[in-house]
Length: 127
Image (cartoon, rainbow, N blue to C red; front, side, top):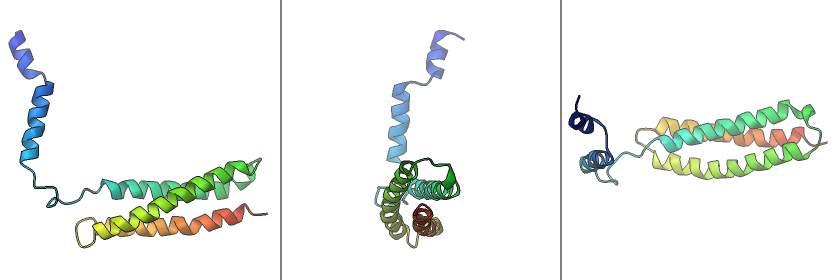
C-alpha cells in the first residue's frame, strides 16, 4: 500500500469530529431524548458496595484492634447513604412511567436495605 491509502485508512482527529458532528445532527433534541440509564446503574453499584461494606464490617467485628477503623467506614457509608437517598428518589421520579422504571424501583429498595443495615452495623460495635 502506498502512503496515500494509509493516510486515508487511518483514523484522524478531523474524521472523528466529523463523525461526531454528523451523529449530533441526527439526534433528537435533548428534551425529547430518553434519559440514559447509567445513573441508575451507578447508584445500584454504589448501594451494593455500601451494603457489602456494612456486612463486611459486621462480620469482621473481632478483627479490629481499635474503634477508629470501623468508625471511619461507618461514617463514609452514612455519608454515601445520604447521597444515595436523595439521588435514588430523584431517579425514581425521573424514570416514572418510562423505560427504566423497574431498575429505579430496584435501586430504591436496595437503598432501603442498605439504610436499614446501617443501624445494625452500628449496633454491633456498641459495647
